[in-house]
Length: 137
Image (tube, rainbow, N blue to C red):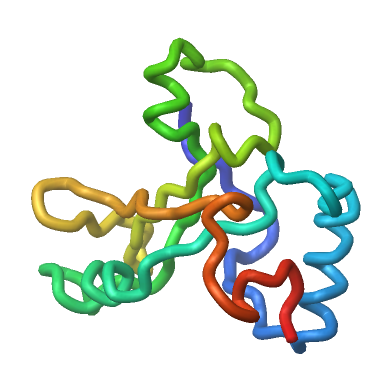
C-alpha cells in the first residue's frame, strides 16, 4: 500500500496556546468519559533522553526535519493472541512508534534500523506531580 498524499501543501502546524490545547485535550478526554475510566489512553509519556539521542546523535540525525508518530499495538498485547484485534483506546493495547524523516521524506533510523517505542500509556503509567494531570496547568 503506497503513501497517502494530501492535495494541500504539506507543512507542520503552528504552536498553539495552552487554553486551545486544553480545549482540544478536554474534548478528547470527555469523549472517552475519562473520569473514573482507567482503561482508555489519556496520554503517552516518552523518555526525553532517548528522543534527544535519536534526533541528535545518530548518523543523519541532523537531517531529521520531522517526526512521524504512529499508533500501534503493544507487543505484549499482540503476543497474548490479539494480533489484528481492535483494542479501542485501551492502555493495555496501544503504544506509539516514532520515526524521524528528512525533508525529502526518507526515514532516518537509529543503529541497525531501530525506531522508538518507549511510550508509557496514562493511565496507568502517568508521570508524577502536575504532569500526571490530564490537562495542562
